[in-house]
Structure formats: C-alpha cells, structure tokens
Length: 60
Image (tube, rainbow, N blue to C red; front, side):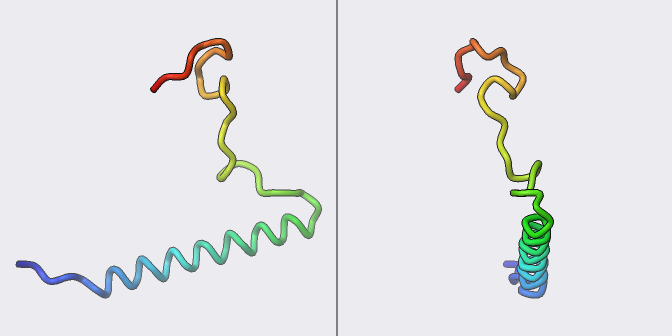
C-alpha cells in the first residue's frame, strides 16, 4: 500500500492560500481604484448567454 505524500498536500494547500490572498488583494485594489467588483473570473453568464438562444429551454 502506498503512503500519503504529505509534502505534496501541504504545498497544494499553501498554493491555494497564496492564490486566495492575491485574489483578495487584487479585489481590494480594484475597489480602491473605483472599478467595482472584479469582472470576469467569478461572474457566471446569465441564461441565454451560454450559447443557447434566449427562448430555448434549459438543458439538464
């Protein structure tokens, strides 16, 4: 049986923490500059914008 690679897990956790911190700092800088909420990454397209016509029924 293989042993868990705790070093890898720790590194991934540290990278995720660093990424989250950078995102928060970027969002704070954007707010300070008056740009409002960050656009792009975390915004979901509204219905009808994801390639289907606006009148089409949603696909399961």
